[in-house]
Length: 383
Image (tube, rainbow, N blue to C red; front, top):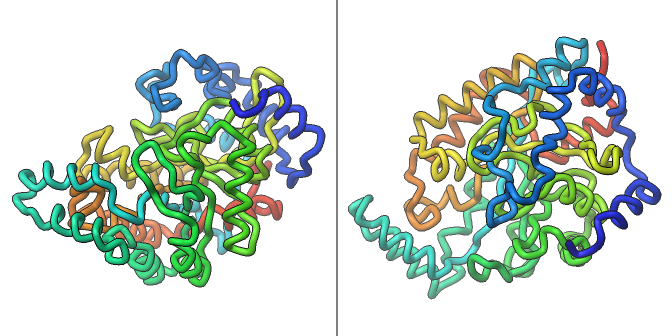
């Protein structure tokens, strides 16, 4: 850790003023059911021995075996809690994109060469090589494509940008490289969030430094974060991000399966079992990720759509949220992260938007959801 966790906890509890989320009542209700409380706080995640090499707690390590059941949220609904959304929408779909790559890395060319045999085409490899030598023509510059799709559905989303080019997976981009792209995002009415550097996800001083650099370029505060490759250590990550000045996190979700990591289909204020304190940050959990379905679960686009539709059913029944993480490079077919994603994965995102609109969901970005809750209208409360 960049600083002692004890110091971070003390500083957050005593010195940071946050919007009152009125979660004590929710915490008290869940505590009446010990099994659900154990699932909500995920006490099994407090042991570092159960994390993978990227400091992630996987579903495969969990004793809770029903990730598609938002059991804690269902219980809260049974206890008379409700959440409300604009225009009386029955639930919310929260759209987000991790902007991991803007330029071509050598390893992606290697992926494309390998995948060219599967796709029976060398086109992805050729495009990547061209993008490698001509960065301005990089096929990973897909922000405008995504914004155009979302505009057709009157939708806004959150784009999480890195603030440092140094990365264990290869050099990324500088803030100056993406200044124009970020302006396009803001002009479209969408949100820019902070994507932590892989090596500094647990170092609040470095995160704070990069956050300030991002804000200096934007000329505006950045209130939300998501950790690169979903690195997350319970409960330390929440304390680190809160101490660095963030009002919400949207990292918490399983990397290896879609669904509800702690049984919640609603945003929530976390609770630290060690200090017995609520953690003054809002968690907007991730339920669906493109890479999870393709790489970890080995689902086809058709199977993935069925899975997302079933999760949307579960969310609608408890008037919750469904947070979607769709990487920006998914829109770069035929390149698509070295050719892993076929065109159907690009169309799948649009199919999800169509489904959300048909079901009259509130389709929004993470900041708008945070602000709705902060205003008092969207928080869980008794009828």
